[in-house]
Structures are given as C-alpha cells and as structure tokens.
View 1 (cartoon, one colour):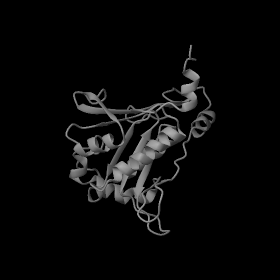
View 2 (cartoon, rainbow, N blue to C red):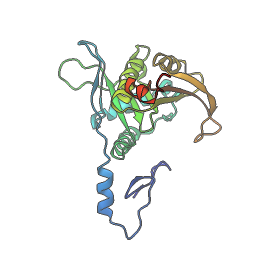
View 3 (cartoon, helix red, strand yellow):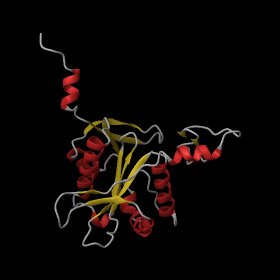
View 4 (spheres, helix red, strand yellow):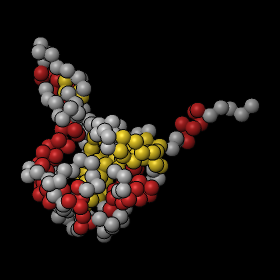
Length: 225
C-alpha cells in the first residue's frame, strides 16, 4: 500500500507485510484499522500548574512548525532538520497519525492547561511500540522540568498499563539535558555506539527495565528446601 522512508510496508497483516495483486484490499485496510491505537490523556495529580499530555491535533501544526524552526532545538535532536522546511509540521503530524493507526506508537502534546480552553502545545513526547522514548520541548519552555515530568507520566503508562518489559532512549553526545532527564527517570546508561540507521553517527543509549511484579516473582521463585 505504501512505503514511508524505508520504515515500513503495509499489507494484509499490518506492518512489514506485502500485498499481492490478487489479495483483497478491503480486508487489508480493515486489518490495519483494527490495530489503531488510542492515545489517552495523561495528567499529573493536583490542580493548578499540573502537566497534561494530550493527543496531537491538527491545530498543533503552527506551534510545531514554530518550535522546530529554532536552530537551538534542532541542534540536539535526531530527527528535526535545520532549516525546518515549510509544511514539515503538517507532514509530521500525518506520519504520527499513521503510526498510531498501525499500532507503531503514540505521541502526546505537552501542555499546561488553564481553565477549560484547549491548552497550547509546548513540546511532544513519543512512546514507540518497542518501548523507545523520544521527546522535545520548545526552547522557551526548556529548563523547567517539563521533559522529566512528561517522562514520569509515560513511564507509569508504559509499565503499569501497557506492561512493557523496558523503556529505552537515545541521544546525541553532548546533550546534557537529555542525560539529566534519563537519569531522573531511573534509566541506566548502556554505552555509546554507532546508530544502525545513521552510521557513523554515534549515540548514547539508555534503558530502564520494569521491575517484576510480586505475583510474577512468586510464580518464578523456588520453594524453600
């Protein structure tokens, strides 16, 4: 059906499948739609000033275009080019929607709601299907702890609701802000090695494993002799 930057091929069984000329297109589309992910709103406890992660919306395009056009943001991110092309935010929003439709991951807008009006986007955070975290925060909103607070919400969602085995993340060497966030999330630094898709680009890799539940620990423990 489509191929997006070499990332995936869509077919009757979802991602990384082929669709033969004699196969039913309608059933293939239905199978893809059945995998669509829902992106719930995640909120910090408390009242005034609490962080809220909400699904992306078409109205976020202008904020994304504005923040991603800042060279200071692009400098330490993996997937934001500089200069940021016109229309790139619209394309990225569409791609994020397609990934959710395929079950490949969720992306949230970081917001600080006041009252009942829709809160503007201050940054984004993504959780890919295999547990990788990625985020950026608009330059005017950096150094306020928003990335850490968003990461804590996603960590709880990933472990308590999705029961993922681990969270991972990567960043460019020298990105001390991401280093601090990952450490505050409890992630451990696994090393620095070339990225498989961007060689010879070298990245720092981090990981956090979910602690086994008490019931699982009892199941796998041996009886005392």
